[in-house]
Amino acid sequence: MKTVYVCQSCGHSTGRWVGKCIACDNWDTIVEEIAVKTGKRSISAPILIKTLSGSEIITPSRFLTGIEELDRVFGGGIVQGASILIGGEPGIGKSTLLLRIAANVVQLSSFECLYVSGEESLEQVSLRAKRLKINEPKIKLLSTVSLTDVVATIKENKSIKFLVIDSIQTMYDSRITSAPGTVTQVRTCAHELTILAKQYGVSLLIVGHITKDGQIAGPKTLEHMVDTVLYFEGENSNQYRILRTIKNRFGPANEIGVFEVSEAGLVPVDNPSSLFLMAHDREVVGSAVFAGIEGSRPILMEVQALIAGTNMATPRRAVVGWDINRLAMIIAVLNARCKMFLHDKEVYLNIAGGLKIQEPSADLAVAASLISSVVNLPLPTSSIICGEVALSGEIRNVSHADLRLKEAQKLGFKKAIMPKNGNYSSHDIEIIKLGHVRELREVFNYN
Image (cartoon, rainbow, N blue to C red; front, side):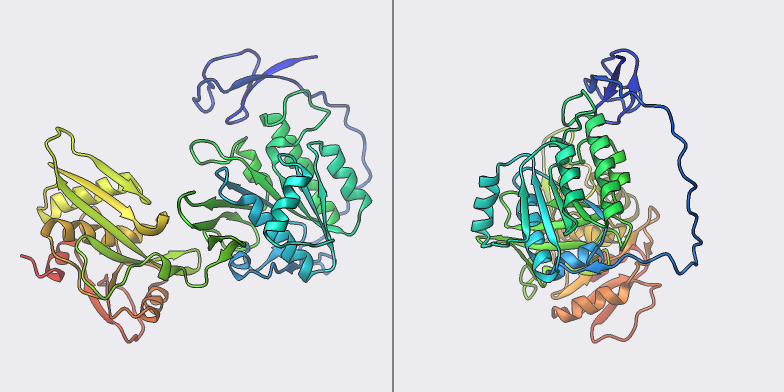
């Protein structure tokens, strides 16, 4: 029996214990495990090779969940035989969402669903189903942490085509002596389940715990194994939840679905832009409406900035929903190109509604909100803004400009501040074209 020491963060193994993993530089993540013995490779039957253009290759079919926001996130429905990993903070609503997905799937299809709960008892799952008013005989419940029991149940019941694992960190393979939740157990159980799903055409939904850094716990291999990776975002104090696609082999990535927490569970939101905006019929200092793109969906969101004086040697920079390093870059550009010095000011930036912006086209909206707060003048009423700011101060074009303008027009906006060199179709919205970030001062009528 051979002992190895495995990092629980990245999966790197060594022959002796060390305090710091040499692969990922994390401390105190090395755990002793028993090495898995591998038998001799047996000679298998000849492998059947198929051509890419051959008619014998069948394209997998999709089935809908009946919830438009979910179907958008999955890329048009769930693919039969696909493996999906969902991660999120404790108590954010992952189990509630999966139970609702299972109920909708069995209602719209002829097959059954197996809900495997390794963290809760059958009574707890039943109480949640009663609260959500779900009473579906096609949903089979199984409370176990044994991988063998799950595999045997799927093989014996051919009518089960939808499998929910809650959660992968609780699953246990008896062939491995390490504890559940370790890198070896998570990797082995996930591999066995994904192979089982593809062999029997079972759609697999796996719940994954996350670390304090917001990443799915376990080896990064776990995200490479599955077909789709989803993150459930939101604050427990906020009534809205965002389901975001990080990886999707069967559709576009970075799609989001917005849900509202209610007594009946998670209710999809039809018009997310209206949730993240305040009334745009009045002027507000330090506020700019950014027309963003999440996946293929345009969403308008409010960027708020506050500039405050301080006596501290190092003024504070606080950001919620955006990259703090990119904020530092925008401040440096305003300092060098616009002669707007903020070195002795505290800067606070917030993306309203709990959204997180990643695309660089939000640069101009952030710069506009900072300038508005400094000069104490608001942007023009009912206006949106988007554009990427270069280090030279030039404003670069953005993708899907017409899609952003169409969303703004639908919500009643009259003006749009856009990059100068962009190609825009005819819209019933006034476009103010800017070529350099210093031209923002003219928008505020400030010299």
